[in-house]
Length: 593
Image 1: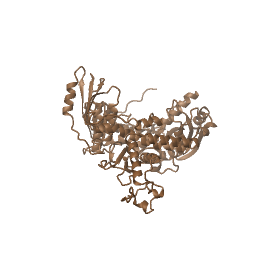
Image 2: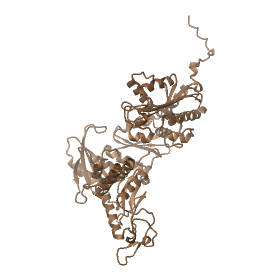
Image 3: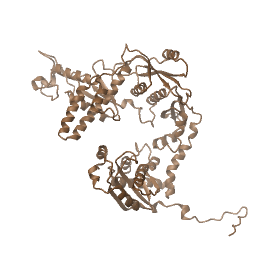
Image 4: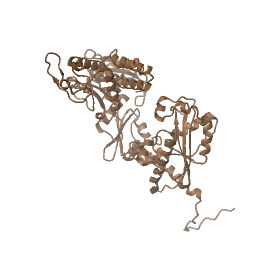
């Protein structure tokens, strides 16, 4: 057929009716299968599916549901059993995954697959199909997590977990880590998010896919902010148009790291929101990655950027305090005061008040300290040690009662307090041996859950005490110089020696010496020009706790050499029977912190 002649100059184009393919697939006629899996955890390659739940919907109407437990060859870990309620005995009589998959694939045939964090669920389904010898059909996928990140801001929800969104959007079914209920909740989340898109003109499936790609495009529009940044170690600050610091980060290559915020690989919703508000990026070039890490911590503590989650509110950390009352007790506090000289002891900081409470319970399991919160005076001794005034009046049931009621007098209670100080500072053997005896007794009675609770309490205390005992020598050391031979890296292509000066747990200076150059003069110059750090008040460190921990992690690397150490002022050593030894004896030293 000959081609149609072109229209004459100036003529209007002839309108052509668009086909349905050009208009896209309307959302109201699209069939979605919303799926959720419960698994044994781990990676899809070695993990197993324990339950499949799915709901088929179209136009807001539920067309059908699919649910089954799945027998897995991988044992269900205890932590997964607690989370989901699915035990190995429950799935023992269930059909294997090779029998479940064909039925599920038939249920989902021709539909668009929907899941919350769809990458996780589809990866497990594809891996299970491969093991069963089935073809994974590569269905079209909609991820409600990606949609939520594009539509729900930090002013509405602190995160985009399914439970958080369910509470925010008022789903009819509350997610409970069971597959069908979680799938039902995801259906409601999907419909609520689609409702938010109605006033944006999103009517087709193609429009829906464009929502998440638009978020990527908005980030790419800011990629010019990475132009001209140094390719060197350092910290970086995102600022808005008013100069307010939005976010602080660190990298061994500032330019490459900042450029990654403007690509599709950055999927965090808060980072998308932060990049949208950013107007400039300010680099802080550092001599070494360690200095960059320390600068980051200090900048976060100084500016408290709204998009940094960690390290910006050290005052909100929880500490366990042994008080200075006449009858000392353990208390949870938010602030370390300069009252160590008066007898106070501090343990922490803890990441959560719950973990701090576990540590307190572990100490109470071993040491008979009073647990009441009232302030108790001490009556003057008449013909013996002082006693509790409330105990004398018969109004107190604490373990510090007078001897006439089977309790402790002031002298015996003081000995208990000293035992607590010993457990905190240098010898945790009493705590660990008492805990092991208690766990053995409970295990013999088959009270395994209670034995696990004793272990968790003891481990919470030992972890905090181990960190405190590691920090104490470094905080007390007036000056320490260490060196590490470093390989070529960005900003330092020839390598050399990395020199670090630490004073009272604070980074006082750092430098790199070129390869083949005598480092001794550089050490002398570093000591002469390093920051002057005065010893802090008792119990109040001169440095941020996280900074001291970062320095300790660097110092404990293989290959680090001590150049000089003022050991006469404060020996750098750990107690033989300290919390680290106790954790090894308890058998928890290899677990994740």
